[in-house]
Each structure stands twice: as C-alpha cells, then as structure tokens.
Image: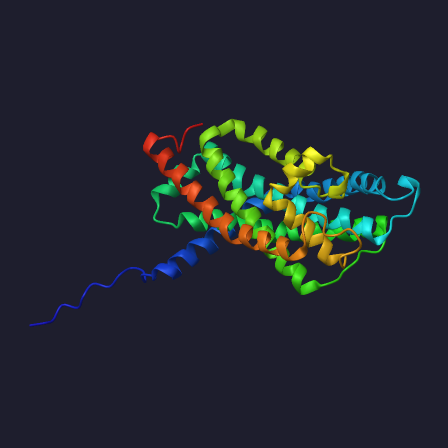
Length: 289
C-alpha cells in the first residue's frame, strides 16, 4: 500500500510581522510606480519649488534689518529655510497621506484594499515612505537654492536637531493619518480643508518668519499648536540659539512638547482613521464617489 504524501501549500505562509512587511513593501512599490508614471508632474514639482523659493526669499528679507535691499544674515536664512523644510513636509503629508485616501476612493481601489487581508496600517505607512524620500529630495534642493540666495545657512547641534526633526515629522504624519480619517467623512470637501490647514500653518506656525512678528492674540493661538514648538525648536537648535531664540518657550520645554507630539499624534491619528474607516464600512460608503 503506497502512502499518500500530504498536499503541499502552493505558497509559503508568512508570519504576521513578515506578512505586514511584505504588504508594506508592495504598497511602497505601487506608490513609486504611480509617481514615475507622471514624469511631467515629477519635473514640475522641482520647478514649483524654485518659484516658491524666489517668493519666500523676498518675503524673508522683509524681516532683515534693512529690508529687501539688504543682504540677509544667517539668522534670517535659518528662519526661512528651516521653516520651509517643515512646511513642505506638512503640505506633502496632507496631500499624499490624507487626500490620497479620497483619490483611491474615487478610483475604486480603496474598497478592494479593504476586502483583502492586507494591513491597513501598511497602506497608510507606504505613503509616508514616499513622502520621506521625495520631500526629502525637494527639501535639500530648496535649502541649497535658498541658502545661495539668502546667504550662509547656519548648521549647529546636528544630533539634537535631527531628533527634533524626527519627532516633528512623526507628529506631522500622525496629523496626516487624522486628516485621512476626516477625508473619509467629508469627501470632496477635503481639498478645501487641505488648503485651509496649509494656510493656518503658514500663519500660526510661522515657518517663514519669526514668531515675534505675530500679534499677541495670534501668538497665543500659535502657542496652543504643538507643531509651532517643532518649528521653533528645530530652527533655533540649528541656528545655535541666537539671541531671542527659541521664541515660544525654553528649549527644554519645547523638547518635551515635541517629543509628546511625535509619540502621541501617530497613535491618535491612526486610531481616528480606523474609527472613521469602520464607520464607512458599516455605512457602505468606502466606494462612494
């Protein structure tokens, strides 16, 4: 009597961590393929940065002692350049992490994603990976161009500044997760909401000018926004804490706020996203146009 050998699986089962990692890698690849399918947009994003840099260079010189006719010192350069880096990270996070959920919903791929056993966190985190790489390249290009126009770029306290940047970006990505949750609720109005959030960040978080330029009532609003402390601590640290910096609080207090923001916001943002996602599934609105 011949023994029957057990039927082999057509594929090897992955453990839960490896399955999540595999799904994450596949989704990152998908995001890169989509990005490379639009070469005109790829080139235009660099051209757009140069135009924005020109406008912000003139705006930054307005805060120099002699106005736009003067040569900017390193403090003016640091305020504008380092604030701009955080601004484009926030902008790209809102669009690539938050609003892209709506884009996939309109394309009809969001519902298919949720019918699969793929990790939902990997779906959001894959957009973060693309933002880190692409926006990082844009930040370097912008910093080089702006420093050539504004003057020497101050670089001090590198390790501490890197820690502040990581915590601030972590909190920013958490904000993107929360905005993705909002997108599932408000749908087409999300585009208007992105523009309003960007404008609010430009005004209250002062990425392009000192916080001292804000009127007192607006300064109190700025102090209530955790991201403001990330902007202030990041550029003050890299500038070597010149006179009057940091502006919002002592650096120790700002480090505590930035650390809490970087740890808590991604958890809160993902929780809000899962809650909005479950409500959309119950209503059957994941595929709504």
